[in-house]
Length: 283
Image (cartoon, rainbow, N blue to C red; front, side, top):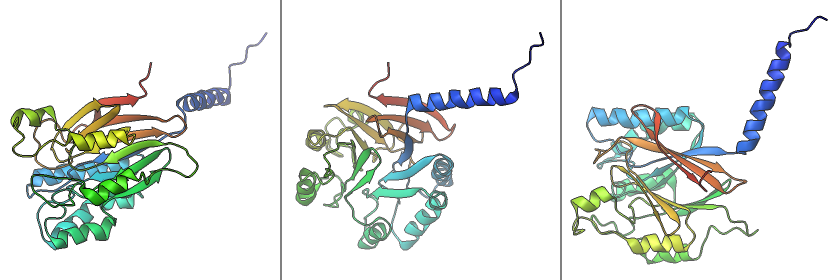
């Protein structure tokens, strides 16, 4: 009996079925990017880093980008013009930009107006598939050292404006430029909190409201801690002078149907994953 060799169409069919099975097992999902302190100091090396981060994100499959403060450094209308040129690849790639203000984004009324012209309200809620993004303003008092959310913003938070009429509860992510909990690195350098105090009461407020994750920048490093059922990230390695570690950004993957998420820290110099977090934890 003559045995026929399987046709290449059969191989293609089997491959497509295997791919579909894997996709179904993983479930529908999408990713977005988080980058902090994209500011561009005068040094050309740092400008090259922030430009490289932007190009990598633009080439990724990120649906949108959340900029977690300190988009610029210094004052003058040219600073926002430099920012516009920097993020043009993201806009050209069709990636929506969301942003929160950092302490360097409102050092004068003109600079604050530049932020408002590009991003609107300084605090608001954005609803994306499977996740509520709560964008917060850590600078309502415009103070150099101390910081607060202010009475008005705190009352707004306590009203839970992200709640949906149908009662569904997507993931809840907060974004605030200054971290409620300082990194271990900063605690060792400033044990008496003379430079900038920790704000655990703000951390407790966010977790009491149901935070799954809180993303901050400000410190030019990467840190992660679990606290009261939430994960607190510091991801301030977007272009400013580093305190320690690598320049980086985060890629967050959302699984809307499963209330599941993953975070990858990407080292911009290599483009490779250097930290990975999954919640709920995989077996």
